[in-house]
Length: 485
Image 1 (tube, rainbow, N blue to C red):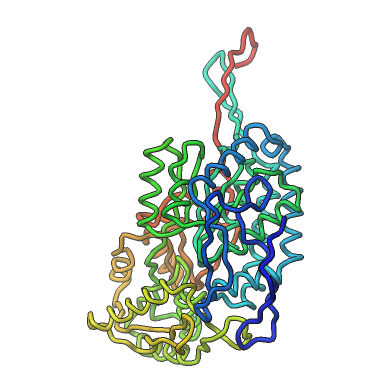
Image 2 (cartoon, rainbow, N blue to C red):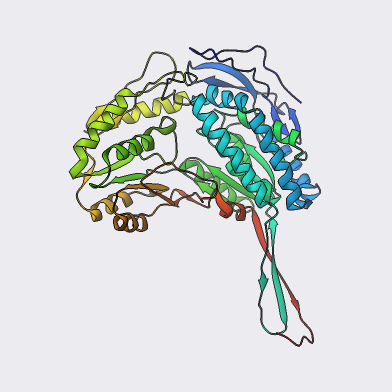
């Protein structure tokens, strides 16, 4: 069942001992197995750029095996046929096991993703255990409706699980994305093939192990490591997968749509990132605005789809706010994510590190004013200073709305103001899936999340997410000789 990597290792500059990496294979039909090809791939520590583990590399053949297992589990297994309360009890036990193993799981996400250990422990594990419990509680509340039809007919609707689900998740929030996708799918009675990002697969494999311990039947949850161009493509185009859910880039989202259309026309849920605006008005509290703006830009090293990468400040408070943001950037401690004194860890991987540095250089060459940051930190690992470019201000409410909407993205937006009329007007005018007022990056499992425009379609979180893993079937029968219609 387990696959142990020899030896323990310690994070740089920390007394915390990282546990051995236990799970490095594929998880198919309830067992950890080698890939069909026997190939492996390296995963890296972003603090050093060094290899920390070798994992089995799945491809189309492995996806096919996982789909066969998931299809059998859906068509013939107990999971979709259990009562909702039975599924819910198993999911609750799964959530308990996550809490019991939280420290080890958090260490995996921190060492492979550069995420702050303390923050992961306080936020990620707690929130995602709650996500699983939320959908566990919803599993026995999936109801159809009674239909009032024409004379002589009666009808009702059934909500049935959609079937075998392919989930492709990104590297920035490995734990959050795992349960954002699997929570509602499991509650609905679906079976799943999940591809974690090749940069951050370790916690997904650990969760598969815990799901088995909790009593999730074999074949219901399968995890296939691999690359997007092979494993992800195989999931997107597979004729026996009934739905695909994906969070990631627009370019990949388009390829998934084409593959889905060319195969069995499977439905999709796509969350494709954004270029989210934060509008700060003259009446805002300067300290609050600075806190919200800085967190919105740099939370999780800026590796978050809703990052407020476009901050528009009304001209009356522009200079004061600019000064405070520069002070915050200079006070930020960049370093080892296991050090509790550190505010920002390394970027998750070399590709993102180099991409960010290239964007910074592009900003300089295009004439933007660099206020602070812009440099690599140290000579080892993927650390970058918090970086702010200047001169993004506005005069009027109308101008702010226009500039906020002047993008093809529409994932999120933020508003900071004390004026209720401004807040209401702007929140209804910006075309984005979630609007935060006097706060930012505030998520809750009961609050639907997703995009407008090319930021995608479909919703994660909330009961709306549960509906996306269900089919609606209408049943109509004649009513003969009834005295009432």
